Amino acid sequence: MAQQETETEDPPMLKLVKQYLDAGSRSYSQVSPAREDGSIVLSMNLTGNNSSFRTFIDLKIPQDRMIVFVESPVKVPEGDKRTVCAELLMRINYTLALGNFEIDFRDGEVRYRMAVDVEGSALSLPMIETNIMVSAATMDRYFPAVMAVVYGNKSPLEAFEEARNPPDATTTTTQTGTSSIQ
Image (cartoon, rainbow, N blue to C red):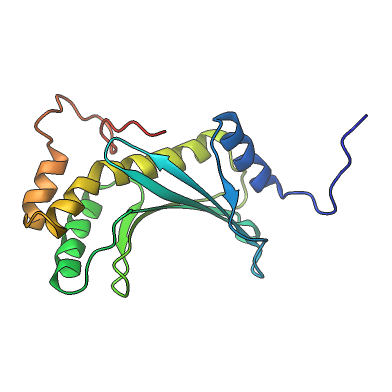
């Protein structure tokens, strides 16, 4: 017997993202019911080599967009540290092929954002994987640099150069380096 349909069926974009997350046995939750603008947000935690990160998948259903946000677990304290951290993030952003870092000067939140617009096309499982994994791996790779400028008194240039050329890495062939995300 076929499973009874619910009152409202998930939009295709949401179904596909859930399919990807379920296939990887990832624990996630829907942050709230669909917003007035039609967007739906899923949340999960991902763990890399350097920390665990709260990750949000913001599905802008009417606009055919998926935006992935990966938040740093540490907020940057008020004052000069936010400016120094912003310089580091801009140095990093200049070298990235995909996505970007952001800092909220109001509360010190640092996050990485990556989006895909599929208007006139269709979201695919490889697109979902790329957006989630590149976002998480990039945050994981550069998180130690953020900590070094905020708490280790390194200059943005020193922290950036160390993150781009880690002493223990023999080769770096991708934007994300050698992070392992789970």
